[in-house]
Amino acid sequence: MKLDPAVIKLLGLDAATTSVSSAGGGGCSSASTSKIVSKLPDGTEKTFFMKSGSGKEAKIMFQGEDASLKAIHDAVPTLCPQSFGHGQFESQPQTSFLVTDFLHLTSRSASKSSKTQSLAAKLAKLHNTPAPIPDGYDKPQFGFPVTTCCGDTPQDNNYKESWAEFYAENRLRFILRRSEKSNGSDKELRTLVEQTASKVVPRLLGDDHLNNGKGVTPVVVHGDLWSGNASVGKIGNADGEPEDVVYDSSACYAHNEYELGIMKMFGGFGGSFLKEYHELCPRTEPVDEYEDRVKLYELYHHLNHYAMFGGGYKGGAVSIMTALVRKYGGD
Image (cartoon, rainbow, N blue to C red; front, side, top):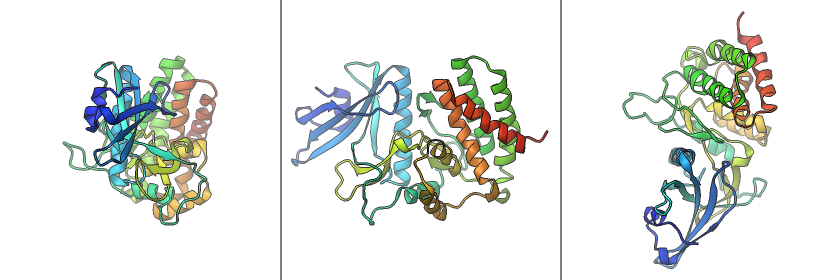
């Protein structure tokens, strides 16, 4: 199989000494994956991983993942593969691609050297690194410079100064609108989401409430960190021991605890992981509301899965909202 000239140009490779073959895993419903192997002038081999897909959706998805990986890699280089860029094939302009380091994966249960950082330590480092200040602003904002996709859902990452406003508008109300497009109008769901966004979110996440009234600092989060998006392996052609890595990211600048919602929803990150993580990245004050904040963040992913797949995910969302509105909704 020949590699498209646009990819050859992006990577600066020699087409005569470069091959491409199919690889497993895509991170979304419509992406194909490939392994690129190129022999360099010094005789060594370099391997890359490529996703490709057709249409506007793939273009948006790959642009978002490129920016996500770069944001994570800038903060913690050993946590994720490096992205080398994205674009459109010359031979098929309707087909988009993304090229990253190739991950030589084992399994999360594989033994790792004591010299490598744990996933909990790497994630804590990511979440202790303040987000950069976006162009045109004088301080970090909640959001992200491009659209990112959580599953197949393109998310609204327009900047907000307030975390509570971002979560209520750009996540909860946004995903309700997506759900109504795919599942039809639902008065019960709309009422619960609106009560949660207008009453529970300000009560639990208000800037004058969190961190003893100081609010929270935006940090880069992976955004879709369930156990299937974390593993153990070597990045690219790097020497050394396998270590914890993440991929298929859907980043934004957020409250660090937002990351824990999807992690709790699907499990796979045990008590020892959270113990180590919180020793390095303490729970936000008020600590006694921590579990409810994580539930509130988990809610978004139930709603997102309902928007994408329908079915029983609505029940999980309704259960969370009913409990939180009863506890924090005032009247």
